[in-house]
Length: 380
Image 1 (spheres, rainbow, N blue to C red):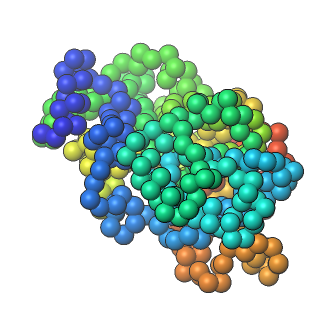
Image 2: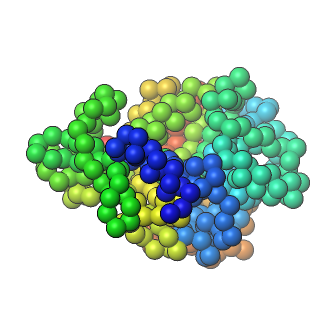
Image 3: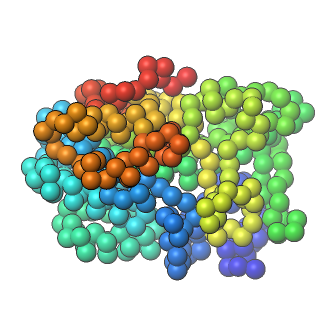
């Protein structure tokens, strides 16, 4: 039995069962033994890890994001300082890619930038600081344990995340005998943990269910990410002026909760293989659920954020790179020198259709290059 399994078993013995979001939070984020926070010999992302990200492809993704942030700064009237706030920064590589492009291509913008990383993990924080110090960007970068601690900073700029929300702990519900019940985790089975469906006794979860277009057929199972809603409301309240950019895999609610998706989207990844063994050996594998972008956008709107657009990564990056692809003299990201990376990031068979971008704003212009090719259908 691992140390984390013993901790989870201890909680279950006290309460008979624990909610799945608690299990997922411990499995991913326990300070010593969580999948994202523990020290391990091999990387989590890339060829030797458990999954690929856009950052794994190389520095082009960071350059493209920096190009969009540069335009945001311009249309906002070039405020100083301009905050770029990243949450879910992993090892800090994306921050270095963004800052290096700003330094090389737009020196005036680089001087205005104040890069902030929100990171609760002391292990990841040290990893990020080491990489950023090695790249000589320490003077441009600050760290906060939680986004809420930034309130007094009154940030003006952009809050962004790449593959963050899919790792937020989710609640798991199922339809049984004409009513909604919640899956919790208890002891049992060959692996030590098993599912237990329990009566729905949480008012916040019950209220959320009422707002969703859920099928009412018995056996239907899905996830609800209340943590993501709270997080987005925090973003809207903390941001003084600017944008929130959320890039992740997911769907609008009309697709997320379609009746053909009987088993939801919850899954785990280990060695680049998808597995349904969610409860096995917690801390050893990534656990993830797709993002309900409609609920995320509505939470932002509740906190004063206007939804500007929702577009897949292919169209988002093509919009950002349009001037360069049209041979404009605008600051360049180097697509011609990185065609293979460009194709991986944008081709529908690779990452282009898998990831989506949600752009929201607070007291900031709506015309952005990343939305140049956005679909008018919005977020049903």
